[in-house]
Amino acid sequence: MAARILIVDDEPNIIATVGPLLRARGYEVVSAMSGRAALQAVERDKPDVIVLDLGLPDIDGVEVCRLVRHTSSAPILILSARGAEGDKVSALDAGADDYVTKPFGAEELLARIRATLRRVDNPSPPSEPIVRGNLVIDRERFRVLRDGEEVRLTPKEFELLTFLALHPGRVLTHRAILKAVWGSHVVDQPEHLRVLVGLLRKKIEPNPASPKYILTEPWVGYRFADL
View 1: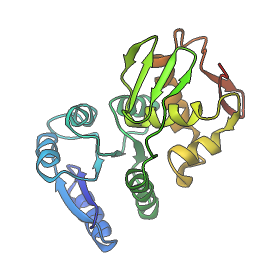
View 2: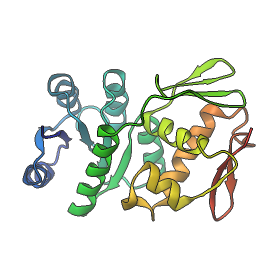
View 3: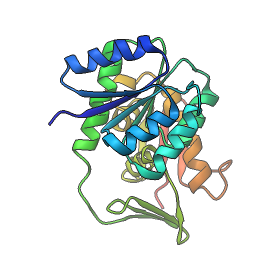
View 4: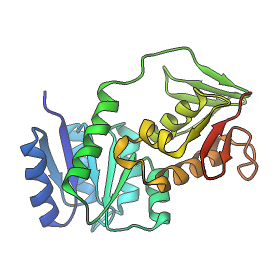
């Protein structure tokens, strides 16, 4: 069955370009040109992937992303002309899974959609919770507890935390983490990782300025503490 992709953008040329591109690759495509229309489409069409612009005419894309996360776990790929790190932080913190800056290459966009769908179609099998110090990662229920209190993570934050925690004490390079969490198409874009690690530390670390769990290995990558 073809994956259904929702394109949300107020630029007709983007809809007219991306829609046929995706249909030619066998995807089912629905579109919306405003935030309200996007929320209605998510409820009505149940898309497998959402490609979302941030500069919408009625509701800012970051807020749309946050509202979608109340009702849907569908991966959200931001496609926006906003390239500042602050915009990426806001979108990822609101629940986005990936971020592509306009102008974009067609093959790059297709590669990111394929990588997103692979993760959805082949989720990790249920397994025992990962316990690291006072942190419990329940992969079966997609829950994280710190000192017995639940910590709310976005899907991408959960995926990153799980990957790091599965390799305690091991130094993981930026490229290795990017490939595992985002796919091989973003191994040369470390800003994705830096932003997400910062967001994750704010949620799980007792003191984000002095991390206990996710440790930085300068110029190399990150290491999850062997607790």
